[in-house]
Image (cartoon, rainbow, N blue to C red; front, side):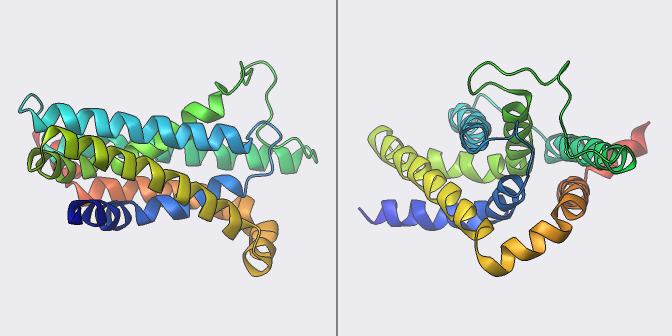
Length: 207
C-alpha cells in the first residue's frame, strides 16, 4: 500500500498553492460566498482535472502546455473584476461587496461563486494534468480507485485547513484589514504565473 502514501505526497506537492487559494476564498466577507459553495467549487474544479487526467492516461488526450496555460486568463479576469467591484463599493460607501442581485442568483449550492471557485481551481491545476497522466498510467484500475479516494480525502483536509487558517488570530487580523485588496492581486498574479509556467506567451509569436 505504499502507493497510497505516494498519492498523499503527490497531492500535497501539486496542490500546495490551492491551500493558499482556499484561504483567499474563505476570507471573503460576501454573504453570497458561503463555505459550502467554496468546498463544492473546489471539488468540481479538481474533479474536472482528474477526469481529463484519466482520459489522458488512456492515451486519448494530448494538450500542449502552452494551450493549457491559457487557463490563466480565468483568475486574471476574476481578479480584475473583483478589484473593480471593490473600488465601486468603496466609492458608493456600501458594505455589499460583490453583491449584484440581478446576476448573482443562486440555486442551492450552484451560485456563480461556486463556478468561479471551480474555474480558478481548474485553471490553477491545469498544468498538473501533464503530471497526473503518467501517474495514473503507471497504476492498475483498483489502484487508481484508491488513489482517487485519497485525493478526495486530501481535498477535504485542504478545505478544513484553509478554513481554520483563516480564523487564526494573526492571519484573520491581516485579512480583515487588507484581504479585500490583496486577493484580487493574488488572482491576477496567479494568472500570469500560469502563463509563464506554461510558456503561453510563446503562442503570440505566431499571431
